[in-house]
Length: 446
Image (tube, rainbow, N blue to C red; front, side, top):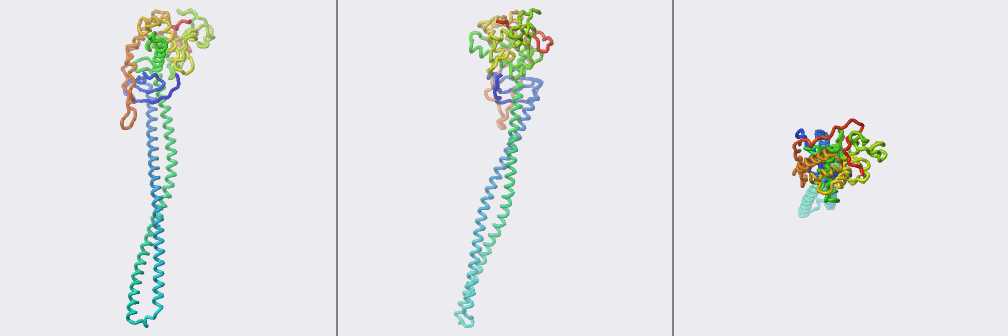
């Protein structure tokens, strides 16, 4: 399956025996974005994802807290520096004022001294004495005023010196705090990046699990449904006259290998079963055709006889002519559900012609896939059972993924549909083998 980004995941705590999960996964066909899958093994993936989301929220909140504290500290740093500058200017003015008052007092004192010693008091008449007395009174008044101004200026100097000491001490402590906050922010950003990576990994794991899980209420792995839908869409663009629907291809896939799950294996998120599905030797025994090896055992590992291979059970000769790259990854892999489904769609169209969305047309195509009436009847019954439940299996895609209006967290997905009855009849049980062995129901070689 071609690698693609996963845009979002909505996980919900288990609500019942049928757990459900909805994922918006860019690897899926757009029509399948509303499909719900179920499975009891979901909880570990959902729990890991929800836990990662919680840690991401905590890391985000931690970074916001540090960032806000940095903003407050930076604002206070600016306030303190402005205040220190203003206080230094105020103290400088106070010191200048004090210096001027001291100079004035020295001038007054010198003038008073010179005036008092220039003429003996005993030589003054009464008018001069009165004048001198008034002058002394005036000097005393001026001196008192200048001394008061000097005291005020010195008080300003003392007050601003005390304020400067306190502000500079706070600024020193704040500078150290800002340095600590810078380290804390680096750590918080690192935590957030780690939490984001954890969310991405756990979301990818949950989405991968979902691709391999069964569509709720069916036996269809979601990745198989995706392969069938894409194969039918591609065929409709190339040969619209065939009329083959996804459920027609699903009828073949279910009958051949139970959608790539035959023998207990499961398709991975890339559409390739975890264990190769290889049929019994086509040696003419057990009702099989006699088909000698045609590829040196390249596909089936058998150098004596051909075997049917992969989730759609192609024999090597047929695969050489019919193999398709169904997922656009540049490879043609008989074990890949997407490639095999695309090849099966082409083969069915060529075998059945037009009208493959009817029971008669699909039966005709199935007989071309495997010339057995019971086989073709089973394919048709299975396909039309899926067709009857198409609306349940593939609900309309949501227009917008619902979110909580306050937290913007994803809301719970819709509940899973009720479990449906088994589809048609079961294929024969597999025989024990190192690979999964099936009876040959492969399309005939060209």
